[in-house]
Length: 403
Image 1 (cartoon, one colour):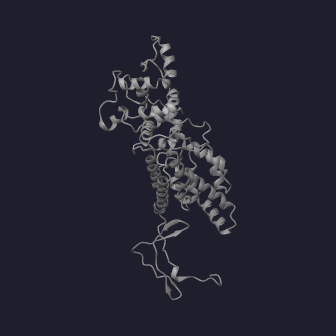
Image 2 (tube, one colour):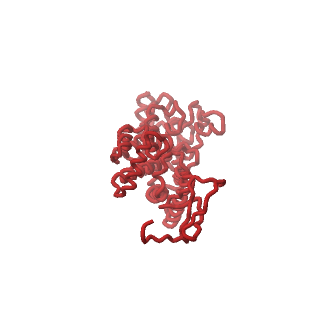
Image 3 (cartoon, helix red, strand yellow):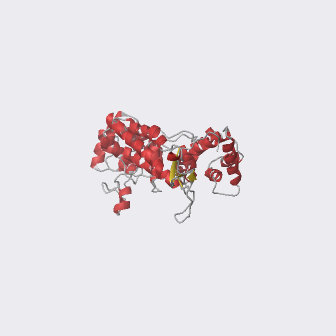
């Protein structure tokens, strides 16, 4: 012990790592004082238990996140922002996420791997918050909910913090810390349970995974911008897979959302998602909820309701004998209610309908409020229709998405 160092025994405690209840442990004495035993302790916001169980740390990290969400809720109530979902989403991103990251996530390497994006309890809580902002039920799938809110998985922020932590350790002025890092890097060749081995495996699935692994194990700095671009590209894999699938051939919510509803992605995959324009509109809470439900396939159309109610997915409003999905009710269903709605807002449909009617050589009437089955509307046209930013479309949304 260094000369002049004084230990405050009234604030000192002892923890025996990896001990069991049946272990015979001596009482730790400091001078004439017996120090009390603890099974957990907190260090820089991280809760550590005697078995080094990171699940305990993760559960502890949920508390500040939920406290931040409560403060966001109070702020929204005080400033009357209930009908401003974009404000809720932004506050959650800049205030809620940092509250759930403090100190411990650089050790949560279990959640950095490809395919582990939604295993964390904290990630599940974040998704619950986002679903509540949108007003959709729990059946709305994870990836579309994140994209609709312009958010990225918490894995993105945790992995970024881990790489930044590694780069900073390389330049640390603490010789002890540098020696510990080098020892851990040497262990990675023979022990898959060490921190460096976990981080190395977490690069799997990235375009430059071999480059990042080599830099990590050779104690070289990892270029942050290249890494973030690759990480974001890996997390957008679900959308690249959806590109090759058709919404009407594959009944998957992520595929339908990607082709028909999602704001188009940046082709480089290096930028975050954009929030759709309707979330910035001054819409009633009920209207906003209906639009979100429609876009995320959390509605009551037959294509979805037949999964839990049973029965057919064929439209029962018209005699077209087609699947009642989003595309059908927007353009093809010829029931009186929807035809009247299209007539009322024909300015939204006329540019899309007129060329198809002309091509099919239909009579030159003022406006035909539905398409026949042989008329083809592409996925891009459906997406452009649902993502248009206009006042008339906002008014149409008040009625047109009430399914």
